[in-house]
Image (cartoon, rainbow, N blue to C red; front, top):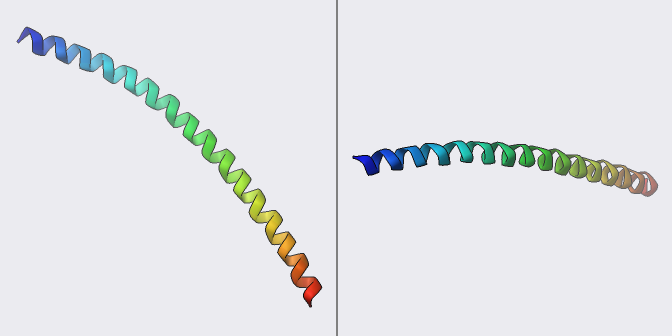
Length: 59
């Protein structure tokens, strides 16, 4: 019973550490996702402008 209690307290400690780590990872994933979406949006915008220029020249 004592070992179960010790296991439970270590699990709670691990859980609190894990929640902090997951929060950091979550924030990093959000920041990386925002950066990636900005880059992808920029490429889509520039490529659409580029293709519009080609299309207008073809007309």
